[in-house]
Image 1: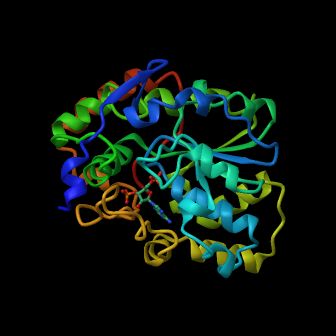
Image 2: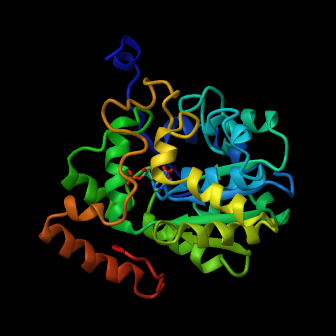
Length: 297
Ligand code: A3P
């Protein structure tokens, strides 16, 4: 471990309008919430570990006609912005980064819908939400919090599942997050995607995104984008796999950012008892919402 890792403590979580955020993000959140986008900006929203990087890569490729050189012009964290990022997570804050990018900018956020800057709705920006089933999201988040030194320690798997079920993780409750965007998707014209659908039929989902963005690309270009954004190709692509990211922030010797990229990895982590308790609680929280999540393909 480098000297910097030893001296930089893991952050605390601070409530912002009832949502827990890492302290380094919470400290400048007022400016983030006042951000005013350009009407052509595209917002990609997701609870952490739901496939936001994958979706962001697809959108950047669609905007660049699947041109390999354009999409390898810089790491994804430079090509696209992370709205609420602080200087602890990125070389510069999301707001400073946004000033350097030219609209249409691809802007990722993990903010729940009720605190997304109102400008995105007022300007009618295209908004894509990607959701992933709760159990796989929890597993992915557990590994991510181990390697992401700018987030709190995840603790044991047992305690992590407890925190997930009680919304005590960065960006709050998964349940409220996925329901919030689901309930507003028609009114606010949000394209609501599922990670599992993207795995099952990536071409269909890439075409849905393309149409939503009012783009029309040739079949060949669509095929190329589907190919360039497979898990394998993104994992091998230094411009998509975060390999250039400082190890003081993402320590990929602990766990890779591009870890497994599958549906159903939860079966390797939840004990039968954990799974039953999780399902019972899930039913209570999610029954009314009726969101068609798949936990296996
Ligand atoms: P795993 O940890 O299960 O592997 P996010 O980008 O929102 O942080 O989500 C990260 C998750 O999406 C990780 O899941 C990562 O491997 C997965 N992922 C990233 N790119 C992917 C792709 N092209 N295909 C499938 N999964 C992908």
